Length: 188
Image (cartoon, rainbow, N blue to C red; front, side):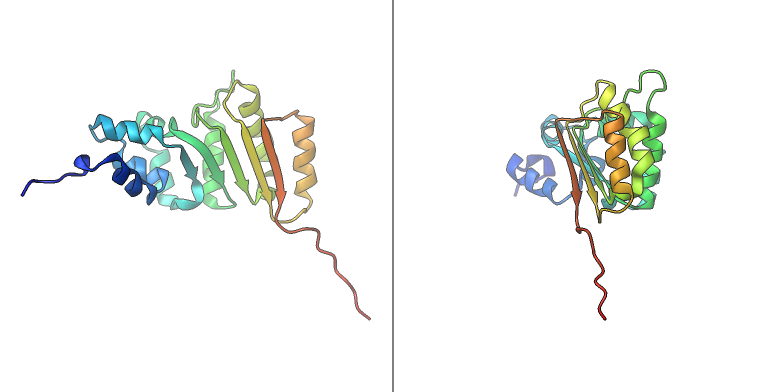
């Protein structure tokens, strides 16, 4: 009987295996294998970085890891998804610090095309000033912005007016409200 290895599996099976892993876990497990075919498969997939799928300790270790190691992974990221969590706020603060002060070049996620913010009402000032302005105006690759609000509370019009004030525009912008205006009906 011949010996089978992971590298001997056909591409179709590898892609099925890859589909069960988050992009972060996938890259942690396979990015540094010395196999050109697996490397090609990894770079041919559109990767999403959903902070919600990471434990805070994983994020902390990753942010403090070797920069070359981190950049090898982040160069593959097409979509970044944030939610209202401590890990998301930590990553946003870290991302803000990585923008170069002079040209505002996005060095953390240089290939980002899509940015999705769940519970966007929690990120009014940080989101607009620190992240979106440099992403839009510094020859970056952002093409799709999706802000999802739980309800049209006070931050929704503020964020909308900041987007207009700072002339932030990308190919596709979606400002979504999950729950419409809730009216209280008083009964006698």
